[in-house]
Image 1 (tube, helix red, strand yellow):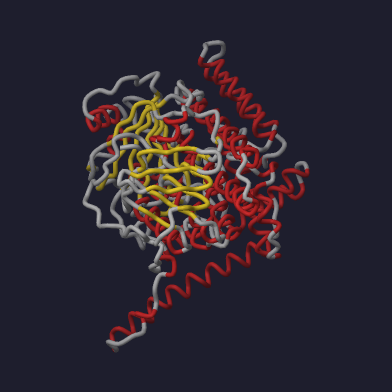
Image 2 (tube, rainbow, N blue to C red):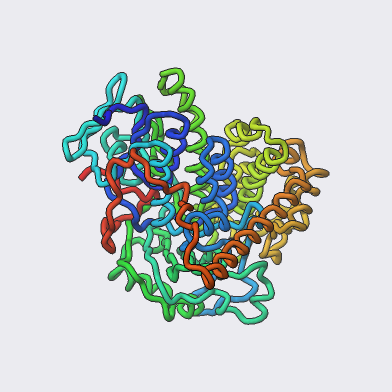
Length: 613
């Protein structure tokens, strides 16, 4: 008879819950993963960023779950998980004025990392989330899908969970990975009545077909300014009052997915109330911007649109007796800049490290996890400052062009920290480099752990608030922000942070990447030298290894094709995908899913359907 007692129970098998379940189970922690719906299923949160991808690879190595690292880089994701995912070589931003075509010099772009650690990916979440849920089973977690929890009781020594079926489970600690519809937050009153974030937005989103690459919108002048194709970027259409994401999955030669994720985020100060159906509202808004209208002229939704009210929510506390909430069960800001996943991976690393010690000591006191709350809330508040400032800056291209440098700065320095640790670990195989990820000086998102970055963002935020309040003009705010960046001594001058005309900030292929490292070796204080440098020969060696691995993959496919022309028999049946091997802990099989089952009716960044019925 199966036991109903566990060390840890996790509510919600989205990307965070399944990942943490895999880590804990691999390390010998008896882990229960409960899911109210089933996989595969539609959810958003589909764009990775360099900081997230690197932290995924470090977490995979640190806790002995290599498959998590496959999610963190495009080529391994394509080869080992799903060719339905897209490639992401840059962030692309196209600014629009009502009634006008986009101006070619008002396109901003920031590159992602190149191989061997990049590029990034567009996650087709129904594939990646199902993969990670199955992965947790492989490593020994007990997974019950289609199991809705109806009651939770917190005791002094354990948590009791009762399912609608009447089944009861007990655990020493509960992890809430259930997202915005968290029954735990409702039961314990953890949420702020009014979200503390400045950002105030609502969403419309779906998946579409027939959406052409944004590169086709440009003339030769516009294309000449790009560092990589817009069709291989997470594309943002930016305008006064909001922004759109365009996340293509079928944007590489091996693609098998014709879908594109499309979403529209609206500033509720300027678009307070929905008008018409979600699609009618979407079409009405984009019709004001000729370039955007051309982009979507042939696009059609393949599933019902989802429209939300205000998407922000916040909690002052993620930790309570016998409870830890993952970030998106506690708070959410906005999809802009795709950094919510980074907050999640930082939290998973912190929680896993602390929880393994707690299980060993049989001590689950709140004090052991308090720093998780501190780091996550600091990360969300920093992220909110950047995102809310961006919405204020959308009023004009000049202020948007200036403000966006705050995010580029945070992304650059937030990425180089884990990159430095990753390359140093690869050179030495010294696990102390992996353990450094949870040091306070390295625990942050978009540079929230770096005082210099925080100071620049805070000062820029004050400039934007002064412009919004009418104390200065938007042009003056832009000039102040650019002037400040020209004085910053921890950013390479050649990247042009203080130059309004430098709209494509950087690339990170081998030679430009080496230039960045060499600059930080000879400039800046010890903090930035430590965070932004690494052994270049090791990095180049890893690049050669990447090329060799891709060549082997191509040779293997070619050999198999040639073999099949002449021979019917083969030994391929001996090969199984190691991450998806069957395992007896799969208590409730994952059933086939009918189209649009468990259709989301509201925005839920965690992608979990675990909630009270």
